[in-house]
Length: 447
Image (cartoon, rainbow, N blue to C red; front, side):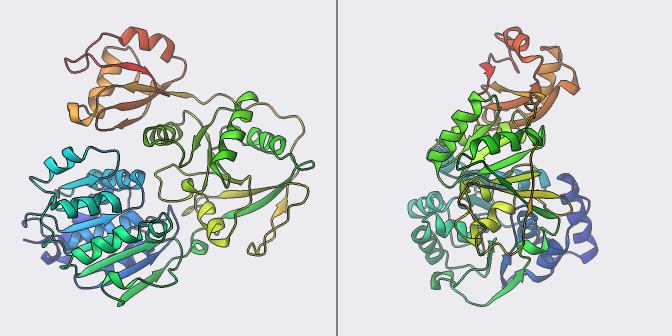
């Protein structure tokens, strides 16, 4: 029996179970409204900032509409980045709906994905380039696809995926429900979407950052690095994102911060995919609390609640300003957006609220070292390794206690574990040569 034909009471109980599986007690207002509005044959534009719960907002009504007894791909979710694809796949799997899901993205072997299509999942999540490639290859039957989600649609356009999305939309001729999500309202909708009849739900950033504070730190002269250094020191262990306009600036500032003793990570488009992924893993698990990034880090990433957003270089537009600040003051949390001003820098016209000028202490101590370090294990999902296996391995073979083990990320062919910083130096030599599930795996410090 299709999920969307069951009784309302039964559906409510199922939704409650799905969201509890990912640690959520109840849907927020936006998610409830999306569930109410999105039904077979209807299309929707959802405007809301990063961190507001857009992923769950479109996944739940999508799952409600899918027929679990029908084989083949019924829904395609397009995302602009590999990171967002993986994030949505993880959320979907954690919900434990009983539906099959697969992810397709660059950096992932095409052959593996084609093999997965031999028994296709009901939901496919992928980047536009890789999904267009599979449609061109006829890797899966497209005639059964009824639902199309274009997540972070404006970001996909910004990254140059217009032709790929056009190709996908024009080939998926059976679509009867579409969802576009965006942090800002689209100026116009391309004709290849196949309809202009969209219901728009506008939960703009202002609805979510009422708890956002604005502050200015003025540098002495044009050298802003010292002001940034003292600002980071004032945060101590509170997580912060530092935004620059160009990757060259990120690398230059990173080098100078290492000299000053600030433990941090970097994230930008000049890094290869594995480097970006590891940087996010280390930030999520607390190995470093500060991440220097370009605007690539402003949207669509699975990163924890951020207390501070720092505009080391001023954003070039209101849109960028909104996206950056969307990383903090989410839902019911407080956060601060900091602007570092050089001698001849002033507040852009698009920033309407007047920030408070803050004077930092002249003498500040370096932040204490983060409590975690990241361990690399050379085995993952494809080797049938799960989080429970890793916890048992570290406790029984490594001698750690549960409190010494933090977040665990299991990827296809590798796993990353946050462990107490005090233990990694003796733990790695102790575990080398000790089998994990009867197999010797490489073990080392990640990074």
